[in-house]
Image 1: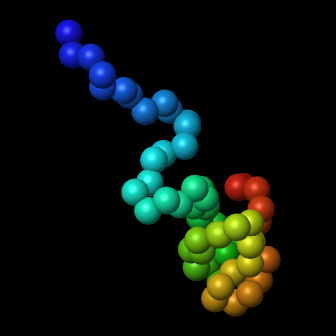
Image 2 (image 1 turned 90 degrees about the vertical axis):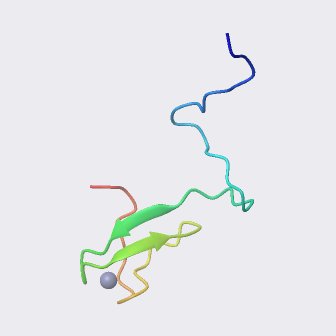
Length: 57
Ligand SMILES: [Zn+2]
């Protein structure tokens, strides 16, 4: 039996090679329809500055 190989836990944090610990959240803007990458809980559309839905619909 092969030992020492760990399976990543589903739903757990994924290891990143770049040291980022933030989870990347995508939100589609309801105003302009562009897909935004939400960083650090800044739920504002970078394209039209409309508020993005904090919760996924
Ligand atoms: Zn927008």
